[in-house]
Image 1 (spheres, rainbow, N blue to C red):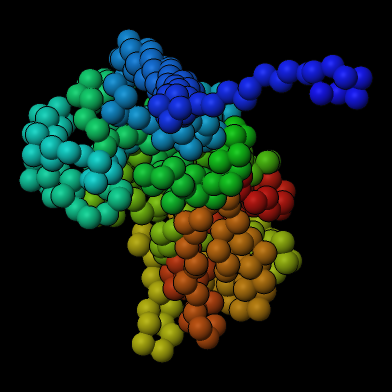
Image 2: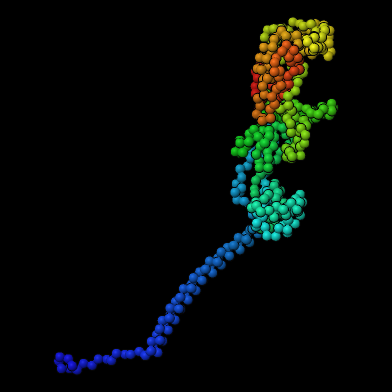
Amino acid sequence: MSGDGQLKLQAPKSRQSPRQSRRIRLQGIRKQALETGRNRLLVTGVVFTLAFLVIAGRLVSIMTFEQSGEPHAVRSAPSRMNVAVRADIVDRNGVSLATSLPIASLYANPSEVSNKEEAADKLSRILPELKRSEVLAKLKSRGGFTWLRRNLSPKKQYEVNRLGIPGLAFKRGERRVYPQGEAAAHVLGFTDVDGQGISGLEKQFDEMLSSGETLRLSIDLRIQDMLRQELTETMDEFNAIGAAGVVLDVDTGEALAMVSLPDFDPNVPEKSRGGKRFNRVTKGVYEMGSTFKLFTVAMALDSGVATLNDGYDASKPLHIARFTISDFHSKNRWLSVPEILVYSSNVGAALMALDVGATVQQDYLGRLGLLSPALIELPEVGSPLTPSVWRKINTMTISYGHGIAVSPLQLASAVAAVVNGGIISPVT
């Protein structure tokens, strides 16, 4: 009863039975389970969707790759895709003497090759120069890298690609090619399998060529071919074991042709045997004989020791110690200075050299570049052989080219200086 005398009624509190409470709890658990299930389904769906996209993308990539004729199992090393091409070497007229062509070299990662026996069978059939046993041994090796074949042709590369053998790959590079073959082999030299110059101009200008700068030579291929032909015929005529020749511009020192025989093909230098790689023009040193009489006369005239009107007694041989100096075709009389050259008199040259003296002789020969290695842009340069002690007999024999050995290039360069007014120019 309230304070105003009215009676208030209150609704009785509802009571839940144990059965009803259990039902409510079960409904809550089901709701929570459904929510968890939805979340898991959502995550699973996202994962499957991503996986599908990855697989689909991979399939598209494989299909595209196979359509290009290059199965995904055989790949090319990306590090060599942008190989700096070695520059060309050309003659003075722009005729190609050396150039580079793109090639691919095959290698294997043995751990990735699943069926090694089958791979060795297939590769040895496509590349018959490879022995199956050697290929199999390489594929069974424990290393992570092994070369199988260097310098593959595009056709062979395609055939290997078609095999689709996992674990095989190509390393892109270049191969040095010499279009003129043996024509200028000793001048050009050659490169190794990695494209580095190891002889000739390829070695001398390796850094320049590697940077891509074309090398233009003073050599004229037309003159080079003519000189080579003449030397070859002369070798055959006299059954000689070798020959050397050089054509110089006496005013500039430019080498228009330079040939050493026997020569070799720089495209396949590994096939050259014996002394074929030896450059007789620049590295070989020889006693040049009567050609030195030209220098003897020149130094006698230039030093004022003799004039063209002077003469020497060449009527009999000279005897010094145990040596005898005589003329092959003796005139048995006095010879003028010009006649000493005309008749190639050893006796006359020796007497003239004695008048010149050892000191002046050495000075002139030194200034002509005959007592030190030749100045030329080639790594293969020989050192002249000179007397350790310059005695009287040396002065006499050197006057006609005996007792001293120089290279053909040194001789030609010295003669050029004599005929061009006395200017010695380094050969280029």
